[in-house]
Image (cartoon, rainbow over all chains, first blue to last red; front, top):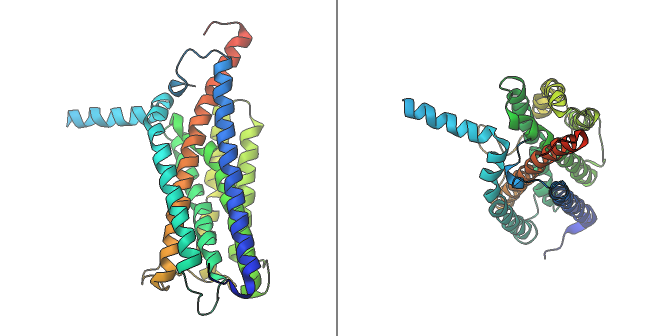
Length: 54
Length: 253
């Protein structure tokens, strides 16, 4: 990797902040999807989950 | 002609039916996620191993590769929500409010990321993390609008009623998008004017434009994936609500 110069801490902090935030958003999306699917199963949904019509 | 009309109806019906929409778009999720990951890896490689330091900004130009896509999405997501709001108010499209609801937290996230990376870019470039100028202030206002929309969704038990209120609020808030876009032209600002999407072409050299565009598509595809999964979840969540209400009334499914 190339040297990042005098402002390396700003560059690394920006990338760390962005990718940590993206990881959190992806995790939150996946957890919400799984929790909802599990709840549908608990309620004994007789239709396929992906056919759900609210 | 008649056949065309039937085909168009079928397309819109498929798009409007929540179950059909989920079935139709589900196969897109993993390919789009894979493509987004590949583009992120390529973007990081270009950003740290290929991109040169910029003449005036030096190495801090590398912050642009995550700042510009975040800022672009902060406005694009809002434009998506405004289009969905029209779908809710004019056509009562069943998936329009599902789209609005799924997009709001993503838009808030990208806006927060744009403000964060902008502050970290501003300190070494301008000597300050924050300045109350047109671009930064209007972007902060956009973040608060997103928060307001998320709060509005949570304030209503009846999500169909919430959708109409949120749609009106979203369309009123849309006035902020052109203000963000043109703020650098209308007011004196520290923020640089448009340098990529210009009538006379980009002002940047190709070795800086390449990582920028790779990251731009990586972020945009990631948004598409998260939006689709969020919409699928919202469709199921509404099915959960329906089933819970039926169970509370002691009805059979």
